[in-house]
Image (cartoon, rainbow, N blue to C red; front, side):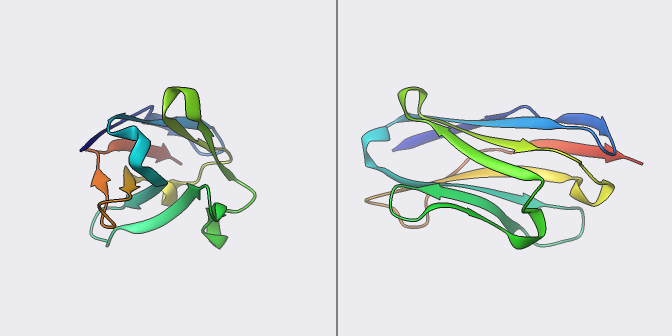
Length: 117
């Protein structure tokens, strides 16, 4: 199994930046992909960005130019750097970790991002 913990959320003004972290522990040698997703109030969870050894980094087109996903393999941690934040980026951000055994992956509890106008 893999345990997933997100951190780095908070309150920021529009135009500001935040860096989210997703730390994985446990059977990390089985990890195939990290993904960031977000869920805004009253909306469905949506993909933000993924990173894997086979596909590299994939960003949702709406976030390109503002968000960057990166990985520190030594720490089994993935980062989501978010710049030029907008009020519509307000959501709970979740990390999903896929492994060789579990295509559905493991979810963290999320970290809340609030962008004020």
